[in-house]
Length: 412
Length: 149
Image (cartoon, rainbow over the protein chains, first blue to last red):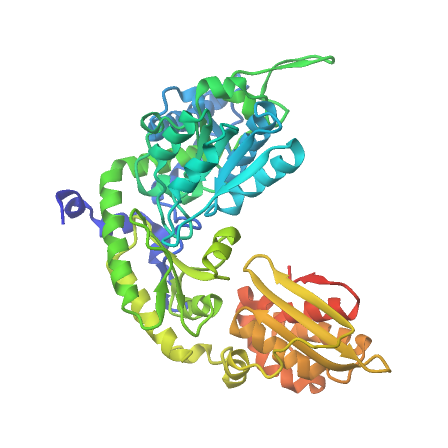
């Protein structure tokens, strides 16, 4: 174990998450569903409650003290998000309600406003539905061809096939996950981007999972767009981020019309505000933005090096323990993978596995994980999925493996 | 371990879930419909053949899903045998109430379905039990698809 991992005190971190002290059905909560939504540290809870108790008004328009302070706090979240992703300019951070909205914004504004009918969009076979459906809608409405990069048997992006999809230079945009929510596979982001750029295509990475587990540097990746959501990053629901290079955001038409996104409005016509406000119509998720800022600061204080080391150790431990359970198959054998492990158990459907684990206080996800095309590719209907966060312990993974052995016996 | 889930995973459910007696597609049928639970990916296809009077003469199903959905489909096929659409509609309503609340207002009519009553204590699993019934009702009414949403 290296120094970073040794300095990582999971007990101290768990103490920051009040919910982890709860019991479920009389048993200690073993929360292994962070990839669906993570728990919230005290810092996030207190930031949001504190804002409501001491410092709250609508933002960007009030000429009074409360509005000015609230605006400062909310805009502080934009600075925090820009720092988190190493964006060159805070105006490149557009707030959305979640990753899904970020992708829909891009499909609508970049898809219809910049891409031309006859051009193509590339997604991969292991996308969450949120990075499939908006592009299918764009295809049907705007005459865009949708190409799907296949996944190998080991659960990795087939890079040769991906490169072949770019060969005719008709691809305008590549929209691919940075980390699979089902398999835990990291995609080779830098190579995805450089290949796309070599063929004249822009790239959006869906960082909903990846940003939780490793440092993302949008400038180093040279990625054009990046989306993530706050609630998986220990922040509140209802707030997400779309990063876009300034020149590209400037080129895009607005997504929704309304207050806050205009420069001027007359009966005849309106003009748009500068980015990012052009894309932020209406009163935003003010408290959630304040909560997101606290979440980002919380993650930064622990540090991605420590987080990545902790989660790599957990994932190794989980793969070792789970592969020792009779009848259990781990899905995907990617070389580069993070703290998400899907599995099937012989003789037991994933839903039944999840119900029995729940009775032992263990929360996992079961089903198709909003990734039906991937399930189809892998020949599966459903899997159970354990996913880890900064508060997950080796003992919890042992509890999972031990209980799964008993589930296996139960259905034998 | 797991003694407290024996109410749901009782002997009948485990037996029927694992080795259903009526899991087959009918060669001749008057109606068939697919039931989907889009949130979890469960799917069931139900076939019905009716007699001259309109009552269900034979039913069968194919399912990909959990023990609860398969056991429920299997028990349903037996329970509806010989009944007409109106009567089955009434059974469906009673069954849904039982699955949601555990209460069984007129259980005499379908004692055989009682092993599923405990599902009400597992709110996320109620739809597993009701999915085949949604598909059956669709098949009886000439529709091809149903959802438990």
